[in-house]
Length: 283
Length: 278
Image (tube, each protein chain N blue to C red):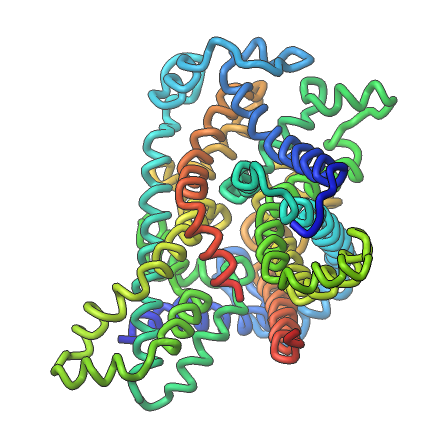
């Protein structure tokens, strides 16, 4: 703090409170909506305080019973698919990025530069711009409706490879030489020296990639045609538009809360890593 | 060691990109039974297709509004968050929550807030004499997707601005304060110029976000409607390729998009290379 300025302090808190109110209000309202019955939610104006139907709503979406709800859309199954996908994408990305960064930094092999630029180019091609042809590749390989088809195409990551490459380059050469002198094989060097040193980067990256994997929408929309393979984010969308009947906002919002809960817990619980991962990996 | 990465990159990046390139020069029927070469016809068709040009315009309006309002709101919040001492973590935690929300879910929540007849905000707006209906009024639909997209992106921008502000040496601010510069003056003369690399990075990042990551928001709320008034480019690629089954046209659109991303990335890297270190 440079100077004491009471008015400015109050102004700061006022603006921040306002910002937080605007940012958090939609989430709060979704939470409130998920605790009311369908009737209460179809009246205008919608309630602004918590209702009493919370357990009924969550019970009915998790088991698919009651409330005239489409019982084949099992939210539990969707949450599981999302979890597998998010963990798979995050783990896959980290493993292959560490391996290729390790190779690029510590080994001399032919076409090293070419490989490096090849990875670099992928930075420029987000999944979204090449959906049609990538979908065709997956379909040709017979991977539609499989976890492999959902996860593998999303795991190549130039940003993660760069992050690890930058980090490996900052480590002193003496470390490598000492390991060599002691007769450590490359694998042992990677496993016992590099991995423990990059723990913070790994944690940070995991948080970011977990959220990335969890929130994927367009890709599963194409790959998952079987309801058994719907991730939660896609399931919600089908709920909110399914059929000609009135949208049951209370249940849709309950699903929305369930869908945002795991990533929100990860973000809040691992806030330190999250902030580090976000700011580091994009620079 | 590098084999897995190379494999994935080749199979899922270069192969599809190559196929898109090839497809964009071909004309095929929806079942893929007959394929013929058509040269640049697909691209020429794009330039003559009014709905594609309209989609370009929509995307431009959309991404400029998202980037501009997202960046200014976040900068304002980050500036004040940098000043406060008490309650810093609570503010930060609450402000980064939207990052965890998927674009589709963000879209649905805002759709709920803006739902005709039961939504909270239309009910407030009626008092001001505005009949809010995203299904009929394309301006309303556009405002809805902009708000939902900005809301989701605030956390991201906020964290970068906060990190940027905290990297500015305190001595600079103090020196200016001793010289009698007011808070506002210090912001314009010191903090904002020193933040320019961050701002530029966020400008590119937000544009890319508005171009590609907002598919979920659009699909969950307006589905490109009313008519085609909120069909941004990425939504059109999806719609033409998978719903209208015009594979050649969709591939040509993908190629155009790839060029846009590549040029944005190059601009970004050139700028970072030449950026001034204070």
